[in-house]
Length: 226
Image (cartoon, rainbow, N blue to C red; front, side, top):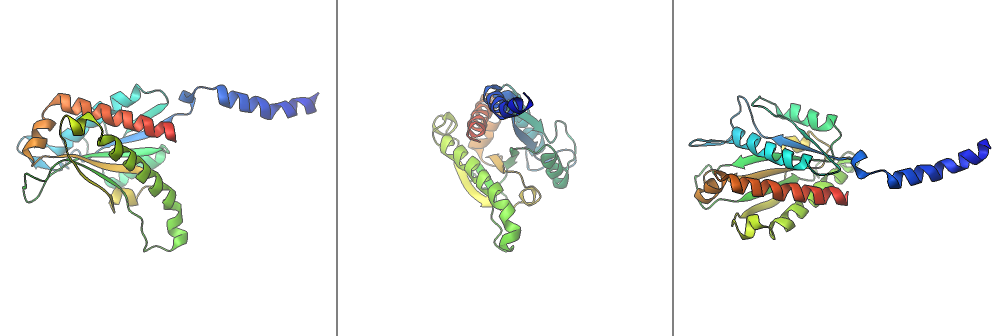
């Protein structure tokens, strides 16, 4: 009798695994609102990056929390100073599947034509010996896949076709937050405070709502492919 029960155990486990709702195995995403506290970030007239980042991160988090199978955390949900090291530790602690670091940009030369969203993913570090860099290949590939999905969907979205919000850049970048994390992630510069067209959209809550909905839908699609 005991032997028969032991033989049934793997079959029962497989059935339970197939029948248990996905919500018990959530996709964990961390939303990182850039800057905060003493770190204002970019400033243009009355627009302050740290406030914009937190405002948008809350919108995005609220939308993602309504998605089945997705667990959402924020590195900060208040106007506090948070180092990049602290952000990286928070991302690592929850064993996230993906993180998005939210930022807004500024052109130091004040060029109005520099505008639109920018998508950055971790760059490969070919200066490291292969045995040391190998552990990050998976992270980089997953990050690229998330960024490519975001780019491809963006070019067909209302944000691009109706709002006419440009895609300014999709490229790897060697950023400190990427270097300190082993989690797939993207850094998004959502708009330029120095571009009049971007600024007008940033000050329009409908645009921010539409952009947050687009990103939430994209993350949900990425999570479904995991």
